[in-house]
Length: 168
View 1: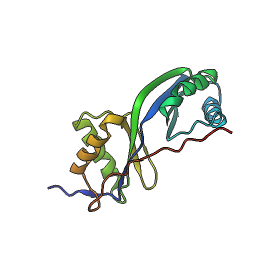
View 2: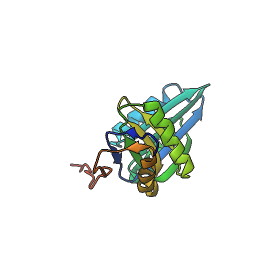
View 3: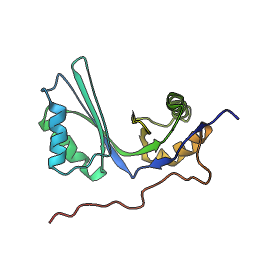
View 4: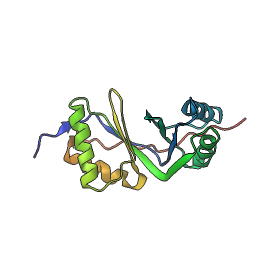
């Protein structure tokens, strides 16, 4: 058996929807306007990735599935009209406390070798997060066992309920 990369844990999200917004030379600050509008409409983001290169802006974000249409409308009104969505995605987050680049490369190989979709990847100081198909989360977690060593008796954390704000 190969030398497995130690993980501090693994976490799955609830079912979400992915919005990919983009535009060639959008109005200056359009992405900030979209984020402000999401806040004004109390739309929570569970994932955010923003990139800009050669005049092209791309914003990827995950929201509750019942809010995806509102995101599309808000983005179009602010100049990020190229909209693509995936209606059923999940976030798989894991915590490699060492060998981070090796962890990223190993995870990408597992996803590719298992033909699991990857819609987005982000990293923080302590975590790597993959956006994949919601129905593939369990399979992805199992397959990552080829590369990672989870703590003994660890099962990925899965949310059991969702708190939804009530308007007063």
